[in-house]
Figure (spheres, helix red, strand yellow):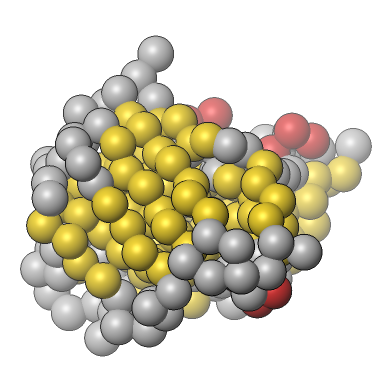
Length: 114
Length: 113
């Protein structure tokens, strides 16, 4: 069965500092991995995905994520956090044989302090 | 701009009174999804369509129904809303290629009184 874990309910970081939001996954076969962001009272917004190829994936708003197959992780990173990055972040996984169903993590709330 | 649109953004209904939420998309994606999200929790998949092929999650209550009359539109019907159905309802679409990343609408927040 597919699953995804986000071990931190909340991450606090000062503006200008690097940020990392952690995600680990379990899936049969090769995973499709995603990060989404959700601002208050809005739908989720797609940030980036990993399907195959380079382990470092770049996405929207300066975010990137690193796929690590041996650690089954897909951590979200940004070199310099902005206050406007404060939001709820969801990691998600689907298997390449699992069709269209995507499993979402529980979410991590990122708080960036000015 | 291509997008996913949900109407209304806020819906108030009475206990037991049927309600319909709507979703439309200009992305021309084959796959459409309905999710329920409570209190900033992970979205919970209710159904998804591949074209008109309907897929119901095993734990989706019978109280929830869906229709997709064409590629662009999808509806969520709640036949007899209970207080526990108060939530944000999210519609999403995905393309058939490239890993099925999903594009979400802004959501409809349902209140049951």
